[in-house]
Image (cartoon, rainbow, N blue to C red; front, side, top):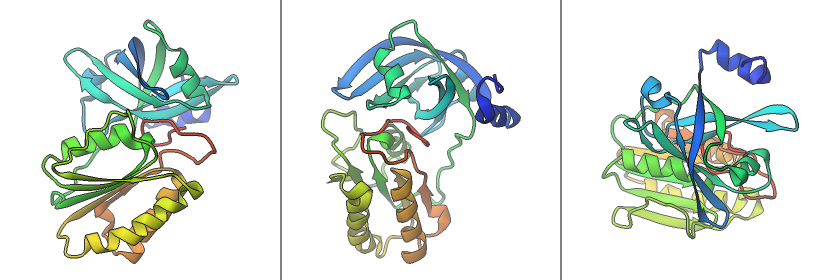
Length: 252
């Protein structure tokens, strides 16, 4: 498999990544540009276990070459060996596959590098900067953190999307996407410093496009002096003119 998947597959094989075949069982159009696929896991959950924000790498054919992108597991059920994958549809081989997917279709998946370490001490407040690509991971995260309050900057249109935000303990701050993420950076820089004042054990979660994530991560760590272990920052996609893929790190 490593050779057929190119250098990425070879590296993952050396890292002892585990491979599985997923089979589509249900297809649901949640919103006009947001599709959910339910799959059987080919033994994945029994072999690896489940943890918050868990993701897998899916392998797609792209002009004859292997192309891998990562997606967060949605509602994983170890007893039945099933979970869902969510796609925000746009141009690209991953979205093309998701658009055409039907029950009975299969896709190869690799599990490697998806560990989750809950911050200790537990967050006194979660500050999350996300967009549709990170929505499945956000839903998993706020579920894992239980009663912790959260302030969430959400870049893009949330209308009709499956969001687990609870107004009783989470404040959602919608941010339109402008200037390739520049507007989001301005909003966070203007609003986060005052929110962090006096916060005992904040936890900052930044998962949007790669350039924006890098900019905000540097700002939070270097200018706001939030300790590295209290910041999770991972770019989920590289900015293009089109909308992005929902899922997990390295989204298309």
